[in-house]
Length: 493
Image (tube, rainbow, N blue to C red; front, side):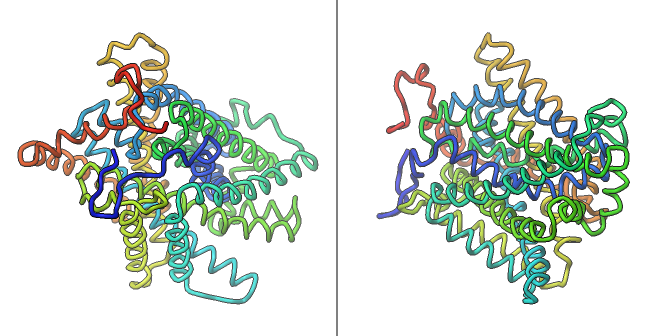
């Protein structure tokens, strides 16, 4: 499907630009392992199950691997830049897909707004502390999103290379920390004892641990730009989940071993207000010089996450534009294959929303980041649950006899993700890091997305039946199940 919207413009993405490693780099950069340890792991230890937090990360990894079993099978049925939106259309129908598309668009775009706040805040504080040069957080955040936008326009293959370098550096720093703790203190197996795992609040621990994996689901978004997507997407998905689980699980194990498993929760709570638990341990185990390096790499990690989420949000806008759910102009691409107008809209939206927060004088960490990242987290977990349900529904309608890979594994994944969604809604003040009434009510945006999807679907069905029918036809154009079509429907793959 490579139509043109205007002379000289294209709606085609860059085919064959990414291999398994490239997609994994894009996905793990969105996960931002160093940020996950500094922020997510610290919160999970303090508010969740304390010294048993390493087990929480491993439990979530197992849940997501079960989901990935069905995810891999679905990836073999279609390749589409719409990611989970495309999955839900296939499994739950066009209206369900509209709902998923709206939730995804809201979630990922809010995520980018949140990364402007986190990147801007930490750039201001860390750079001012190291150099004495102090610039307002919004200007740092705005500079970051502009650089992300320019890099993304160059092409997804270029983004994957840049993100790959950033990822290697931050993971290397975590490995050095892990080894240092192992040599100086050793790892305490007591972190996996029932007493530790069920200490504090295991449900909150699992909920916060789940936020550490957000971003892995973006593998499907890059399917149209992957080489041999039938194999590349499933392999990238498994690799991403396992890598995230190992990195976060082992490093969190090192953290609770360094503080003492029994004392981990109390120690983390003492550092909760300042958010410097990891940096304080780094000063002890790595020394002041490497701690400064870790702080700088945190900035790199935050930028990499912004670039990765910008790419993901842009592709949802692109996919919905191509399906004519949103203005078709959003489907225009550059010669590099990067979405053109979608990238401008996404970066502009994020900059404007963050700018409003800055203009009225709200604090980025206390106000902007909790609202945006908290809702983005909830939206993506809901999206994962919808995708799991869609996988089960799709294969059951086809009478598929592979009970484990198309029913049991994704079914368990759906049930577990649904529990996490309920936990996230009930404890949204913890997810968002704020108990402000306006922030606690943000989950209602998901209700609005459901109602909006149903109403918009009914409108398209009655007033624009060709567009409504085209929601599924658009996916068929990229269906990569040769057995059903009798040929490879994506030229060049």
